[in-house]
Each structure stands twice: as C-alpha cells, then as structure tokens.
Image (cartoon, rainbow, N blue to C red):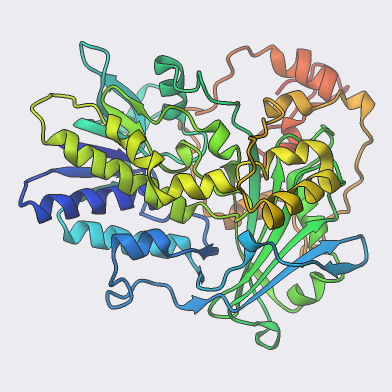
Length: 502
C-alpha cells in the first residue's frame, strides 16, 4: 500500500502530525494520503492513563477542542510539592515548572482515541493492531516505508494455521513516533548515525497505578508531587498523585535508571512508597483498578538526536522531547509532530520521490518547544551531584537565572555505568505485599491487560546468551530480575541450585 506519509505510532505525536498534515492539505486543496500504524489493539491501548496535560499544543492544533468535545474535564486546581522522610512529609515551595494552573488531569488514552477520531474525519487512515517490525529502504538507502510483522507465526517463527503475511506500507515520507526506545528508531540511530553529535540519552522508568478511592477522600483537580523517601539522596526519582474524575487517582513513581545499587527494584520501591503515612490513608478503603509501566527519555535538549534522515524524521518521545522537571511530554510530543508535519507538507509539494524534511530541524530551532526545553536543560544533569546538590543548583537556575544560565551542563554518561558491583552495594529488604495496598508483579501485570499468544516467537533476543550469567549474575546479581516491572526476566537453576540460566 502506498501513501504520501506513513506514521508509525498513534500516540500524541503521531496523531498530532497526521491531523496537522491533513489540515495543511485541506487549506491548500491538495490531495494527500496519510496512514497511521498502531501496534496496540486499539488507539490508546498502549497509553498509560492518568496525566496532567498542558493544552498549549492542542490549543494550536484544534483551537475549538472544547466545542468538539475533547475529553478534558478536570482542571488542575491545587498543587502540592512534598519532601518525604520515612515518617514525615514536609511541604516545599512548588517549583514553577510543577505549577499546573490551566492544565487538566485526563486519561491520555481517551484523549488519543479522541484525536484519532478527529484525524479520521479528515481522511487519515488508522490501522490499529499492526506493529511495524521492519524498515524498508530504497535503492539509494533512503527509508521508503515499513513492513508489519507476519501474523499467526509459531514459537519457532514458522507459519501457523492462522498465518497472515505482513504488509508493506510505503511512504514518500515516513515519520517515526514509536515512543521511548522504539526498536525501529534504534536501528535508524545506527544506520544514519543520528546520535553522533548528541550526549547519551538518560532514561527513567515510570510505574503507574490507577486507584478508585473513597469519595470522601477524593479532591478532583488536586496534584501532588513528592521527592525523597523511599529513595536515597543518590537516586533520582519521585512520585505524583493526580485526582481526576470518577473518584479516581493516578499514582505514579519514576526512578532514573542511573541508580547505583543493583539490588534496587523500582517496582518494589513504588510499593513501599504507598506505605508512607502521607500516602497510605488516601488509598485505604480504595481499590487498584489499573497498572502499567513505561520507559522515559530524560536527557532533554542535550540528548536529542539528529531529527531528520533520508526519507523521514523522528517525533515525540522516540526522539526524547520530554520536559523532565514538568514531568510532561504530551504537549511537547504533539508540537514536535506538528512541526514535522509542516516540514513534510512543504517537502511533499516537490517532485522528489523521497523529499528531505530538513526544514523540520529549522522549525524546531525557531519554536517554543526549543525555548521550553532550553530553559530546563540543566535540571536533570544537576542530579549527578546528588539530591541536595541538585536542589541547590536548580533553585539557583530556576529562581535566579530563570533558565538562562550561560552554560549547559553535561549528563553523567550512559546510565549503566552508574551501577556498582553487587558485592559493593547493600541488599534491600523489601516488605512482602499485603494484596490490599501493596502487590506482587504478577497480579500487577494481570491488571495491565497485556496479552500474548503462548506460541508466538519471543520478541526479546539476546545478542550473546552467555552475558547474563557470565557478567550480569556474577558481578551484579542479575539486576534484570528486579528492574523489569513485568517480571519478564528470571534466573532459573537446577534442583541443587546449580546451572543458573536466564
């Protein structure tokens, strides 16, 4: 199937790009065919609900979004910023980036479904349930589209009784909106050396639960952020609680993946966090109704790759447009998609078979997106000095220099270099889950509605099968057993405890 533009991923950036491109085509009465591929069974299926959403990009994209029924129903009304010790919660001044007046507490999955409806009314074709698994290149080495994976393939990669071959979706322009650590995007980084002039990306893991709480404790529009306990001063991270509609609270916990102790378990740190005297009373009498986790690109401006390559461009969190101190990436992802769409519209007006989107980078440089990321560029790298050093520096940077420091701090380097050997780090004794307020991984994954065929091929392939035992287990006590929030990795042994294998 051939299109003018193929977009991989129906998240905020991909949908915003599709809508903006369709708007521009309509305004100039040009026929453009636009296709959006989404690996989830439906649009929004892979979006973690419960977000504090800034409308700036949406205001530009669809100015009459309220009249069109956009699902933004709960304005943020109250901000709290707390520093937690093991037993106490100390109120701190809310940093400007965390003030949410004018924002909305929403289900991001529901917003994406609404954006998809807007796109489809403009003629955009959206195909959920199809994962792009391969990038296609033309004879000149430019990206010419993507292929979806074969359906109905058994564990050994052979066609099963319900086999359906994948489709080739060819585009004059292909936009990648895969989100953090997109597998196709990673191959683009290597093929076109897109990260050559960028600092290493630094990542976080965000673990989120959705709770239905006692109506007497619910305060629609309330926003709470915490730092401190249960993390030590060397570990970057914190939490949020967003009260939105139907007595629901989105509770999230983020940990930077540059932590030092290989015994740390992000999932269990989040469970322990819920036992704090300032948090536990809110959840008591309620019930957990959702669970999920995702990786976050936290490097910001210093870690942005080159955005353009022959045949296409990167948009959204696959490039890394998250505003870390705001803990917001939806409005920045949408703006990046809109800018790429404007560049694509211009490029598709030429006779080139695969036109270049060079103007995308120029549009970014001139946009409020660049200005916003530039103002907060030093916040995350300052944490290489530890929590208190970062708090002191960021107070200077935010309140006195107002993001206009004449210098740009470098990140610490790749996250994995921060890890010390297991023998050099204290073991962490996590309490057993009670099944009421704290839970194990398996019951949590069940709530995430993640389903796979038992007989499908394993999508995680080891480059060197010896590394997990020879290095990871021997030196670091196999941290993959703990860092994965879905319990995917396990070290199994023989009955006598020998012959360990991943």
